[in-house]
Image (tube, rainbow, N blue to C red; front, side):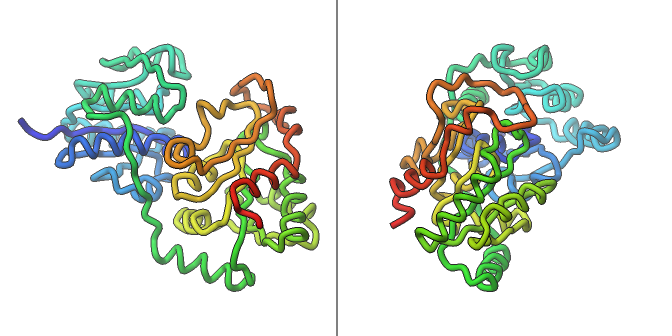
Length: 337
């Protein structure tokens, strides 16, 4: 019997791809001679490749008709045994459907975010796990994996390590904390001013330098952190994806909200302090820290009702997390002496 060929569909985003890695790694472990092709957005190719799980990484721009058309042809030509949609959106489910993949595995209507998407699947899996990584693992089980999830590792390019090392040397930094204040939805983000106050206290009370990570469109956010930090003067950094991995992996600790960099740091083995507001840490929390040694510490106000509604201001519950709360968590994690 020929080895299976799987089309894995997880187009984005950073944290969601990280949460798909354990499930796809279980497929790889179960079928070491099988073929796994991961379909993703061009922005995330480097991330997917870093896990070394897929034999090939294919890129598609779903907003481009020509890109979708060419990818449909490519998928049909490959004759996959099954596709597995770990995303559960129309745009992720449509390509295997249009390319006539015979077996199409995805979430049932109880779990998808967009109504009607399961109509495009042949296998609709009603998941029972709470965390999204565990839910992804249930799709892998349906595809034939022997277990739902397994460990994986990320390969950080050597040139990225060198670039980050040179940057830190120029700034006179040895031990450092990464602060990552961004996150797409403002309602998930701890206020920039509190990150600045945290950097200030880390410098004044512990002699610890902060490195401020910011992504595209977050320059003004970084400037607000720096303005509040005053003499602590955190080093602002926005480099390549490989350099971000090197920066996070080398940090004494990473402080962030429910965002991609936090999940990436956790996957790289860094200690994380995750500040949660409206989103549920049981569903979206630092997964590897929770399951492989308790590296991740989650801070969340009591009795917060979970919601995934996007707002243009930090959720009120985030105001209940103080700078001292974060410092206490860092001391408990033995980050600060």
